[in-house]
Length: 123
Image (tube, rainbow, N blue to C red; front, side, top):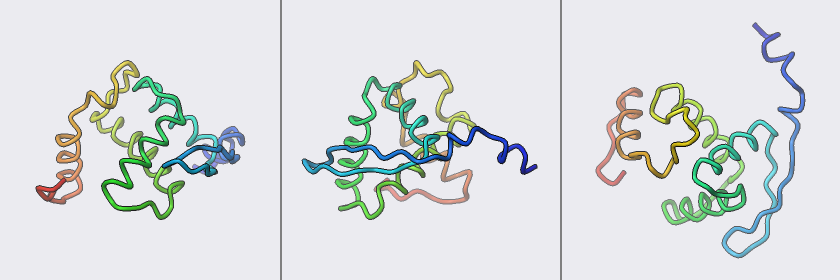
C-alpha cells in the first residue's frame, strides 16, 4: 500500500513559495507543488490566472467569514474538496466546465446530505 505513495514523484511534495497581492497587501503563500497544480487547474477552468484565483478566494472568504486565519490551510482544503467533489460527480471532470457555472447551493446540499448534515438556510 505505501509504495503507491512513497514511490510518487518527490516533486509533488516539495514546497514552493509564491508572492501574491491580497487586499492590497503583498504576502507569500507556501504550498506543496501538488496543491499548486490543482489550484492552477481550478483557475484555468474559470479563465483566471492563479493570482486572480487566490485573490478572489481570499476576498470572498474574508467577506463571508470576516477574516482568514490560515490561508494556506484553506487552499489545501479547497484542493481536497475540489478533487473529492469530482469523484462524487458534483464537479465535472471536463475542464471546459467553469466552476462558476455550477449550482453551488445544490452541490453543497448534496454534500451535506452525504455527510449526514443539514444545511442552514444562510448557506
